[in-house]
Image (cartoon, rainbow, N blue to C red; front, top):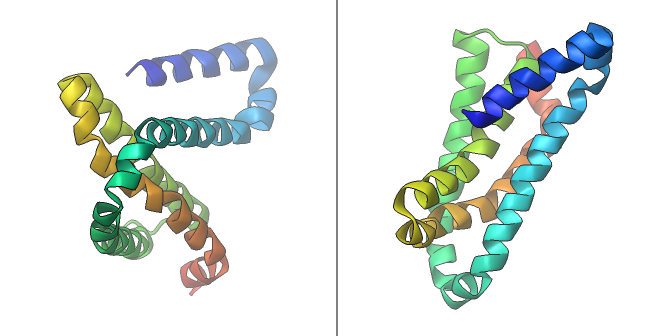
Length: 154
């Protein structure tokens, strides 16, 4: 809730102080800052639990197929729903995919730690392992962006 309120306040301040045109110029940087903060959070989580992850490397391999199937199905469903049911354009679809896929892991980890305290840190190991696969999957998705764009034009 706090990020939402701060975002609204920031937007209102920029629009009132510097007009709508200035906000339009700096708007693309907000998503970059958000993703950078997400990746810093993931890095901190990995760094703090690196020994545990290395010690339990077999669990990473055990979770890998489930994560790959989950992301594959999620992206495929997003493609189908966004194009055929909601009838989004390509750019809006990209926003939905990146917002839904890239933010949930960090949010899950934050909730686990906030609600369960020290036990939540141990519970956050599985989402942290999932985050290992998240960035490469999103990069692969970007690699195929022309195919996805073509799919939306058909």
